[in-house]
Image 1 (cartoon, one colour):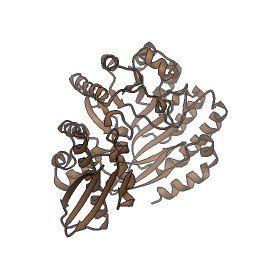
Image 2: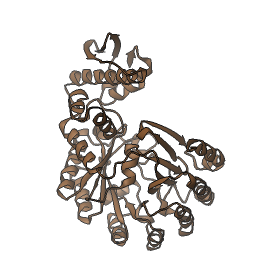
Image 3: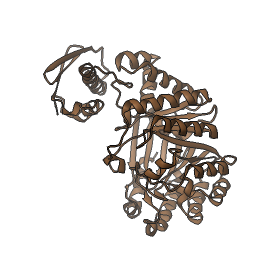
Image 4: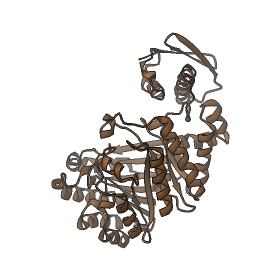
Amino acid sequence: MIDTNLENLVSELKEVVNLFDGADSLNIKHRFTESEKKFVNTVTLSGKVFSYGNFIGSLSGEIEKKRLVKRYSKLSLYKALAKFYGKDLPWGALTGIRPTKLAYQQIEKDGDFTEFFIDTMKVSGEKTSLIKSVLNSQKGIYEKNDNNTDFFAFVPFCPSRCKYCSFISADIKSALKYVDEYVDTLVDEINYSAKFVKNLRSIYIGGGTPVALSDDKLSKVLDAIDKINTGVEYTVEAGRPDAITESNLKLLKEHKVTRICINPQTFNDKTLVRLGRNHTAKDVIDKYQLAKDMFDINMDLIAGLEGETFEDFMFSLDKAISLSPENITVHTLCIKRGSYLAESEDRLSGEEVNRMVEYAHQALNEAGYNPYYLYRQKYMAGNLENVGYAKPGKACVYNVDIMEEISSNVACGANAISKRVFGGGERIERVASPKDVLTYINKIETIKKEKSELFAD
């Protein structure tokens, strides 16, 4: 329970509380007061009082004031909880999805972000160094330009549903009656949206598992995107090896796709069975060998999967490195509502997951991979992060643009979110399509109208 005199910040303060196991059972009282050029936050935790003052210089306006009130209120609550529990967290008081974006903002303001991260926001030196490495890898890719555009299409069908999944996706067999109409609607939206694309940076077909579509239906989507493609990076999330065939790989190559995702998540067969994935680790390797000379390949692994030990994760990571894909992304298991694992109690501790993530960072660096994008989510095991690693010159432009929010995104399909950036990402406007497939189909004319308004000059 949180008792605060800043009612508009209740949800923000709860995010800080959720960082500490057991803190949601505390009786928390927060009071914010303001005097000339000073904010004071007083936090009471089950009778123990903590008070923090922050001197504020000249503020540029009400927007900056609101931002700093939120920042220092959350920071004060974090510091009080850290002292109460005698525990510092790797990301300190940061609860946002994009710490790299905050780092860029601080660089623009002060020329550096290190002191702000470590001294003000209490981020560990290790995580601050990780951010430095990511920003260094993004040199030559990171580009603020309001005319830059990425293009995204979403195919919400999979061979089967994984137990950790909370995405809007469906078993293609059970959703068969909607597939034809969905594909036709998606193609219609892609054709309509082509006019909104300006300086095209990249194309990404995500899912779900796009290659779960039959070749003729997948070809319809690819034909529509051909009209947009100017020879840029072009990624398709092939994802599941049980949906990859020689035929659909050939089809992707014919349509000038440049990279695909083959995502084992783990190379342990027992875990794959538990997750509901209808394939083996050998299937992943076989399909990787089939595709590796045709495309750059992104490969995903998850740290903290149900029932896995540190040794299990180490085995999977070492196997991925031995295959030598261009990208390896290490996700920390995120337990969201709507996934089977949200109901499971068989989860690893934060310390165990952190050990996996640290091993991944060390092993991938030693193998010549550099961290190039990073993001965080709510409900992540160990309050950690997802990090994408790439070989030199093989970073995925789409991942950088989408995470740093520096490029507009024309997005098509159910649950797709189109974004338009203004002022290099200082302001972002969005249009979201319905998550449900049938609702998306029925509302396509409304979606097209909203997109026209979003991207109108």
